Image (cartoon, rainbow, N blue to C red):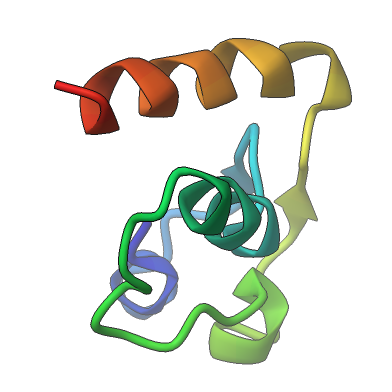
Length: 72
């Protein structure tokens, strides 16, 4: 997600299902190299933006998508 661009143009609230911390853990479990950018919390990148997330009820579904994608 590009929280910085979102904040710059003033789109308002950011809603997300899985955090960058969750994604990093999932990728590590799959043996996928770390992302080429720092994984920061949204409010560290865009401190004035209202944030809702993660959504625990959907995290398993998102994790399954990453497993499918990275195991090809």
